[in-house]
Length: 57
Image (cartoon, rainbow, N blue to C red; front, side, top):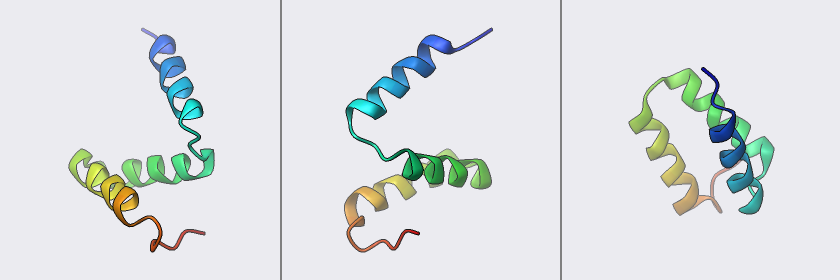
């Protein structure tokens, strides 16, 4: 089973929203490392709420 339509829709949404691919990659790396959806979405909320003070490399 392939999820190409889902992947294509997600890619279009991210591109349309102007998401930086490098930042998306970092967020996905965090999810893979933590394997905890709640912590992942908490992390994303922190980035959205406090992105101007979060130091990124």
